[in-house]
Image (cartoon, rainbow, N blue to C red; front, side, top):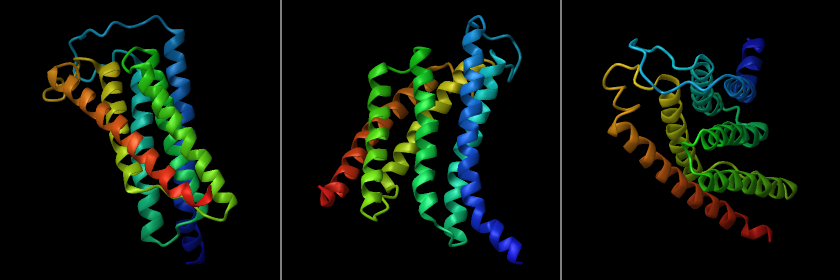
Length: 213
């Protein structure tokens, strides 16, 4: 019983660390894409046939990492094992994941460079604010704006990765959400919401930090 309680206490933090390791895997797989000749985004005639195996594996590594973002927070709240480590490392793991994805999407031309600059700048800013708050004995946890921001950022990144990994090699309605007008609307809409919420949540963190300046 004691071992079970100890495991449940550490499980949320273990999941958080595993998400960081998945980001490393994601980055290595996409680096492998850069070493290979580019693959044209054309259908091959088979459902769920990847246009690029490394991109496909990177997509699923990203999806698993995104899913763990829900479970570590859920388990921490359910078993009342919320820790300062989790409050700091959970959002940091999200930042590493999102920044890696946006940098790659900018490199392949799917995301405007200024969007990635705004997102990476905001993440560095909030990380710096958290460090300042920590020196004052205050933990600046993620707020609801930050959680919605992360949700829409992940939606955009996953939709782009599906497009790059499978193109039109998907059954309906997934195909229209990948290469059709529906996919374009999904990517554009989720990107606009992600940028808006990135700015709103960043300003909200700055507002919370006024007491320390």
